[in-house]
Amino acid sequence: MRGFDDPCGIARALGQIGERWALLVVRELLLGPKRFSDLRRGLPGISENVLSQRLRELEHANLVRRRRFAPSSTSAYELTGRGRELEPVLMELRRWGEYVPLGDAVSPALGIDALVLALTGRFTAGDATPRDAVVQLRFDDDHFLLVIKNGRLLAKRAEVDDADSTITTTAATLQSLVFDERTIADAERSGDLTITGDRDTVEHLLRCSRHSGEARPVPTTEQKSDQARR
Image (cartoon, rainbow, N blue to C red):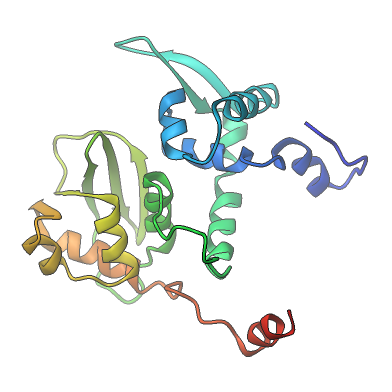
């Protein structure tokens, strides 16, 4: 990777993760290991050659490693301990980025991993009654374990049998429930959402993710003036 001939920690960090797509590859691995084909699916705009190059660079920087996972001995990529240290950095970038205007050419659809990370990042119990619970979230072949504990929401790619609630839906539906405040009842009527187990837990999860203070930020007067000057 290219360096900046600058001893500042920011410059040294960007020398390892500043190339295009590098941090998004890390994002795709925050919730658990992925095969190369799954990384391609999560990053539809990246070419196979560029993804291979970024993975090699991240492996060389000891941020990503490749290993085989039982029982099928499938080869997949996962973050190292050093790579996992980037999680709070990426979550702060995600929060900051919600205030960046979407261009006309940008699709409003979030990828599955980006959506789950937005869910965890936006979640705040606030004044809601404390509720600890385990939720299974299923999108076709992508299954996530969501754990609500001590007013926080944690997520990882996993399948469990003893969840308090199970949500079966699509990424587009969940995005509409969280960002566009579509109602659970409407999603269920249309067949886009199925809830089994404790329904109150699911309602609590969505309510605490909608009203986080991050929903569709309105530009400040200063930001509007800057945009007008441009």
